[in-house]
Length: 166
Image (cartoon, rainbow, N blue to C red; front, side, top):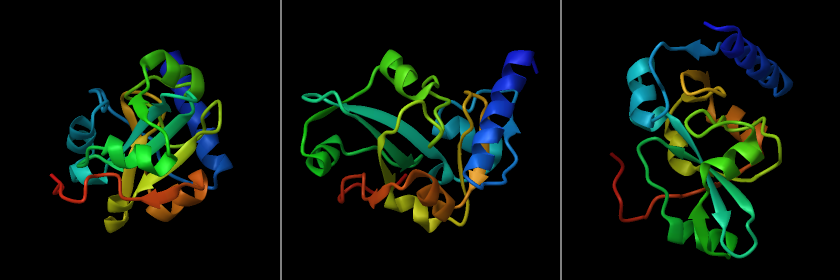
């Protein structure tokens, strides 16, 4: 591991401590940028991976973070109704400027700016879930209760009610 990666891991470990979460950050030699890559690396179900997806209101430019199960796609129409504004996926620069992290490594909390955050109800079927730890090849385990306590997020159904999970 290079000094830069080691420094980023130490930084995120301190963020975990601030939130009262004692979890070991797992570092992989391969990318964990996608839910499938992360699930393969960890050895868990794709649904146990937390995807941290940043959206943006098309009128107000307000950032919205959705923490969804790796098995689900976000129903953008449903999310737009939830925040009462049309949304679009945020671009890489917008995500980095708000969170301090690049897409594929965005953790669920510890961002540069507070974000309106929602948690996918489907994550709560698992005892433990895995989220990005600030880089595209690091993850950490936590419970949904820890996730909700850290983010103060509202739990919602993010996938279309007619969609079945993968």
